[in-house]
Each structure stands twice: as structure tokens, then as C-alpha cells.
Image (cartoon, rainbow over all chains, first blue to last red; front, side):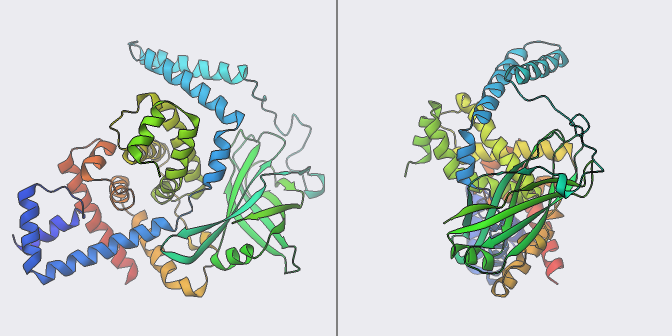
Length: 259
Length: 174
């Protein structure tokens, strides 16, 4: 085997399931060729860089996901999806595929109504002028959630931490369009340390009246949070496009910092 | 800790406690995979939740010999591909989303940014295969099942993907 062939095989990755003879030939070549061994090391470093990049990605709160799985809303969704899935499988025998899709859509809509989903109300129906809205007229809304949690991102790098501040805001009306918004977060530690402000962009889906946001704080701030038991938190949601300049504001609540 | 084959048997009984163990074990790996595949944290979180919802619904069809990890990555990949087809626009994370890592991590942050930029420029199929292999730990055979291609085709995709990724990564590092 020559170097060109060996290096092409290496590009397929460490577990490329090569046929036995090819794998043996590659191993034999690597045993005698320092250039290809270096190439293998470089590719391993490249793979490691990719893994490190994925490790650094936020993954969402497992605990929150588990809690959410138990909520009545999620159980309703599971029921609806199970019915739709069963109907979908039954419909596969029907030759007119479009009719099946239509039937599932109709079923889903009727189930949605049947389960008592709130009918959509627009700003206008609520007697609110989207463009006249400003901060003092906003209803002050509670934050849904009770914990800020700090995640150790990488098992290999104990110092790398990210603090996640997940929360949901019930806006109080259903959005007609899908605005881009900015969420501002005010964190005031109880210990007399200075208040910190963070702002992050968020997309708000049309047809929703809840916004779920996750702030990712850097390692230094995550470590600061770890020193605290509780923090004061206030959230302001401002639309930068769409129907309303200001969407929601919350009370300043006290949150527990989870470790 | 319960091994995956035992968990599969438990899941076949559609026990909610088993699903919570599944979430415990795989929510973070799947979430990170989708986050880097799609380049959008919020969307990745939504699709991770959808993945586990799909998995829950699909439990009656889970076979006893199923590889749990490959099964979940397949569901997540299908979800992501559906979204990619619908919306070709992929938003990639900027450094701002890490909101100023401390100086001691500067080098790692720069490297991550270079990896992110290189990954963002890969075609969807290349990105999926590379991430499933390096992050998901899936074999070529399992990746072939996830993406619906033959093993030889997957090997060729991996060769091309890694070559392209390396060129892009070295270009951004230069």
C-alpha cells in the first residue's frame, strides 16, 4: 500500500469498518511509515477539536426536560401524536395519500379543540394597540420556573462552566406574527455585589403566548453564581420586529441557584 | 448502571420511569449534536424535545436488538433533516453567544470558533456523517442506517467530509 492510498483510508475515520485485508494492509503500512503515522495523529487531533466543539455546546437542562415530560401539556401531546401515528399507519393502505394527510390534519385540529386549547386572541381583540404599547402599560408577569442551574460543560475540563438561566414568560396574548426580540436579564445577587445586566436575542414563534429563553453565562459569571444561594431576577422582553415594541416584563423574583 | 440492552427491554414495556432514564442518559448528547448540526441553540432544544417525543411514540416499534444510541441519533437526524429541508437558512453561533469566556480559555474559544466556521461551511450530509462518527460514536454501518445509504457510500462521504473539513479548518486557522 502506498502513502496516498493509506491517507485516503485514514480520512474515513478511526472506525471505518474496512474489510479485513484492507485494514491489515493499512496497519502494516502504518507500522513502517512515519509520515502516515503523523497524518493519523493530525486527523485524530482534528477529530478531537470537533468533539471539543460539540462538548462546549449547551445541551439544555435534563432535569427541566424530565419535569416537562411529566406535565399535562406534554402528556396531551403524546396522546395526540399517538392517535395521529396510529391513524397515519392505518392510512398507509389508502391509495390516495393526500386524503390521509388531510384526515390526520383534521383529526389533530379537532383533538386540539377537544382538549380545550385556548383559542387564539390577538392584540387587537384584547383592545391593545400594538404600536401604542409601552412599558408602564405592560402587565407584570410571573416567571415560570424556579431554578438557575450551573452546568459543568466538559468532563475533561473542570474549570469550564456555563450557567444556564432558563425561564418562560407567559405573554398574556397570542402573537400574530413572529417577531425578533431582545430579552434583558437583571441579576442582582443578595450579597450586595453589583447588579449585572445581560441581553440576548431570541426568536418568538407566531401563534404562541409563551416565550422560553436560555441565557448562557460565561465561566467567570457561572463561578460567581456558584457562590450564591439565591439571586434576584427580572426579565424584560422587547420585540425588535413584528407587532409590538414591548412584549412582556416580569416581577423581580428570587431564584435558587442549583449546583 | 443499567446497560443499554436492559434499558431497551425496560423501554419496550413503555414504562415512564424507563423513559426518564433514557432522557437522563441521552438528552445532553443528542442536544449537543443537534446544537452543532443546526447552529441554533433554541432550535436544537426544541428538536431535542421533539426527538424524545418521537422516541416515546416509537417505543412500541423498538426492537430488542436495537442499538439505543444509534436509534436516538437516527430520530434526531431525521428531525434535523426535515427542518433543514424546510429552512435552508442555518444560523451559526457567534462568539457572542458564549458571552466573553475568560482569558484562560481564549485559545480554546478561538479553536472552537474555527471549528464552528469550518463545520458551518460543510454540506449537510458531510456534517451529519462527521458528527455521528466523532460525537455519536456510531460505526460506519450504523451511520449507513441513519442516513439511508450503503456503507461504501458513507465511507466515501466521510473521506470527502474530513478532507473538506480539514481544508476549511486550516484555512480559518491560517
